[in-house]
Length: 299
Image 1 (spheres, one colour):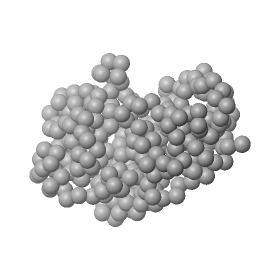
Image 2 (spheres, rainbow, N blue to C red):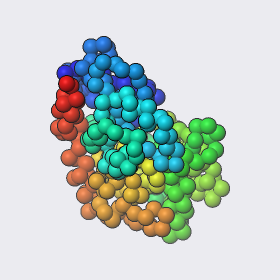
Image 3 (cartoon, rainbow, N blue to C red):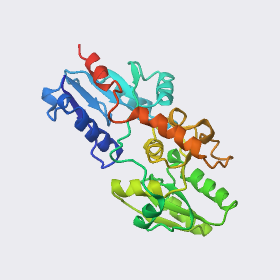
């Protein structure tokens, strides 16, 4: 079985997923779609009949931006769907546009990239203060159309609200930001006088250190298929709280999946260990069922 992976090449998480899959299962991957037995659309878009099975991955769907005509067109051009998240599957099943089979297969964590490291050294290497309570957020939060409006699906407003509530409990909070399009959060923190360190486009190696520098990571998203930060925090043993979104309830201790708008929680060591043990069941070396899934799509 040969698989061609279509990805948008946006230098974002899907590119890494495609790269890691190709490295792990390279004998099943071809860079020539004409030689493929199956086309895997990690970046789904409607296509004409390719003469081969087409599997489209739906990471997540922002229900406030749902476009029925796009998904109806996509449905007519694919063989079946994959999603890494049961919540995404449930939403898809509630919509008449999706008529093909939907399979949930989780993404993995690459323990060669994400692992624990000493906090003091990690902070020094990312220029984070050694004596502060550091709260992390490494995902984009602003709409690309104007770089001002918050990308509400990612919950940057809820992240800032959470940080402000923590600041009401302690006076040593420092925020560590990573990624690009962070204008909304930066303005909110600046307006409230909350100190922060911002690394705009850090390397993966530096992001691993950033996780290890944190006392707490906060996911305030409204819609996610992951987020990958949940897997990465778990693998680096970074304390994390998350809204009940994406795979949060599959990895994190129940105490750490919170009402993000009304609850403050500081994860215990036992809760951090719980997430670590769960994510170790989803390493890149695990047999997660992808090859069998693609093979079954071949008629």
